[in-house]
Image (cartoon, rainbow, N blue to C red):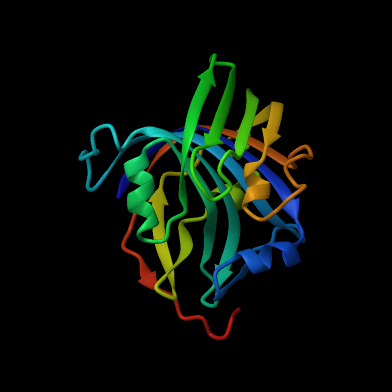
Length: 231
């Protein structure tokens, strides 16, 4: 599946690994940086998602998204993302992805962008945790963070871990190198990180704030991962 991600805001907090481990699929363990696990709250504009080059799905392939994600590694050393939730305002997208175990949640959403400051807002419209909200914004910076080691760890993941029918799957992802800039938080009133299983985290100032103009990306075919006893 081809996608275009635009106007990305990355907010991240340090989290003890013993809080993250129970939230990961069996067969994965927390992937740490600087002695910590991390949780991300990421907002962006999905554009032109579809199957194959230049074959976007009309209407359904373009929407705001806000996701809560963790960072994982499997028995073969593959680093990935584990999505705890993904907010979207396309009900058909939510219903279709839920069938294959991707935790999209139906929400009312908005992007407010005045070119210097960008904000993402969402209110969940259905269970689980119906009514959960988030509202966060940043001032775009000008400092290039593309070579920063933490920024690379948080963004250059190249795949995701998920489960389907009791199997651990890895879904590879490819894209060009990120152009990453610093950012300054204007506000963050979030309930999604808590709803994803990590309460009292996003009420604190984030430990990392990044902005990216955008990138084109492609997801490959999922395949089963051997677990080698990892739990």
